[in-house]
Image 1 (cartoon, one colour):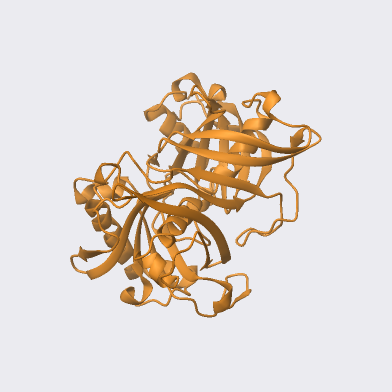
Image 2: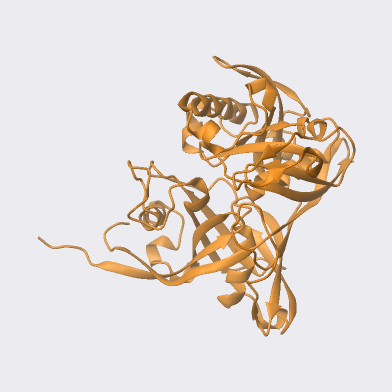
Length: 396
């Protein structure tokens, strides 16, 4: 019996923020996977090790969590005033599909450094020492991200003393600017608030009716008050992820929220769109102990936020959801803003399961519509391994 040989594909395994993923240069992919479609999806599924009924991704590069089941494809940009085109694929762990519906804010922190190291950025734009400004076109959502990448002796600087809760070791700081982060393609004809309201009554049959802020900024997100769901906002992963009823409830809320936001037309479409929208619950500050054992005092933060990604409570906070948090916090009257004290602000520090994070955003009203020109946060990134990934030649 003939067996297909393995093929090897140039790849880099990188940490960006509190996520990890396999990065590819588009031109290095097999020809059939250089374009969107079934071959590309099948290849990425095999690289990551999905679908895996054991939920472990043992036979692939994935780490069996939403934060570590990720892929990135980069190419020299064909768009004016941009250096690199960035496409993100969230790979399902137990199902055979790749979700292309949103961005990964955490891995965005690694895009600039990969692009520089891979020669996708004009060398004239990279200083010998200083900060390289990499202009990224986020192809999933059609938005611009500006990455400020530290450079030392002509190479990307990855080590440093910047600490990020949810990441074990310090590294070099990478500042990200998410330009005009409100979504345009979906829901509400381009409105930041697709229903036209800062707060809605979200009816979820079989679960209840909740006050909710439905926002398209960074990533479509459904914000609900923690107490309305029976939580405090201090929960760690175990409190949610070990409770099948809770996970089922959050998925039902997410599906009805997606329908209300106009992201899907029929409820059953939500199962094929796991990456978006996100569900998050917010609360006013109280003391709690983070997953690392670090004590977070109420005075350290403006509010508490917990968010789910790919059906599980995230161990820290998705970068795109942080943009949604910062944007909503800047707009008086949203549930996020009210949890943060209800005052006008252009930056917010929130508590998440691993610690705290600060994100800045300034919101204004233009012709009755809320507009945010950019949201800013700091992350870090590091190459973990580079070389080749191998997959069976008949797997895509």
